[in-house]
Length: 309
Image (cartoon, rainbow, N blue to C red; front, side, top):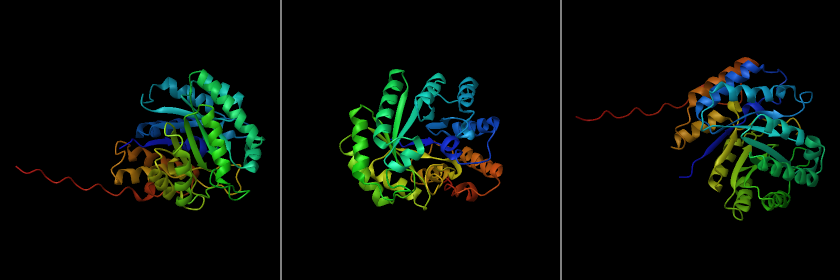
């Protein structure tokens, strides 16, 4: 069975919508808990202007301190989001292992998020990705609003496919489809991934689902059935895009990992650290989080049968 990869995005996508700024020491404690769980990638933050997203003002410091701490397991990568050339420079200076970039398939969302048209953003991201790869960094590019837009409604699949083809033609081989507005249904997910996977079997495909309308976990299952093996998720179900009409949290990491445990996949990922971080997140913000397993606890594993003599 091909390994399923978990890309934990709570420290970035999870926190960017929160008005209460989390201080650096607490973020470091959460990061260490996430790293200790055995997930494959932890997204530490985004290299954006601190005046626009104050929650991400300490991203450079977080990367440097995590690298210097010596507590990052060798098998786990640290990722960061970059939106423009300045952010790319900062990410490369911090030694980010996986640089994440995105292009929206919605003209309205693209202009609100980046101030650029879809065509302009696509050209710019391709140039940035090429620059990052020349510098020796790994790159993942996502197509945002791939399943619908909070402003425009349905996004034609052909528009998504055109962006994907441009990325493929540029030689990019780590791509993601993001349901930024949370409009996807499992049927949508299976249909669209069938169309992007078939012509590019050498691409590592990822998915990023928001739970705005309660279908994120079901959409992960649909993506898994379609052949996707990399899943972006957020501890406690935190998250949401600040540039969409109705923001909703991400698929919850510990809930998805619990599902993987129950189906015999990725039992090496430890639920306890994820649940501990989720509970501390809930305590810090003083409210119940969208996730379920941090409140209910996991279903106990069956006791091993005693061996005979």
